[in-house]
Image (cartoon, rainbow, N blue to C red; front, side, top):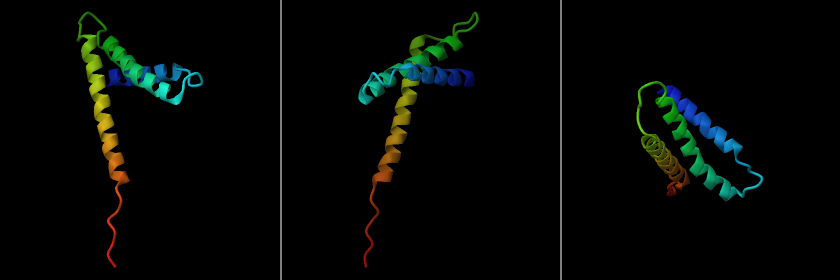
Amino acid sequence: MVGQVLVGNMWSLLVCSALPEELLSDNAFLCIATLVAPFACAVAVWLIGNIGAEKEGGFKWALIGRLILIGGCMLVVNRQQSKERRFPKPTLL
């Protein structure tokens, strides 16, 4: 299980580093990387899970799991950023 996660993350980094940053604008690069990286991670997890005679599951479940993980991480980051943006209460003199 840990090997699947590590290899999945490495494949995501490999695919994102293969995208040409010079040819794409910042917004296009982030959009493409956001779409391609979870797919690469799901492919790696699915391939490692299906090594041998037994079939562990379909590709659909690997992709769904990765997208759920990304959604949870985005919620945590957004919540942390909203805490940092709050202004302190003014003190009364």
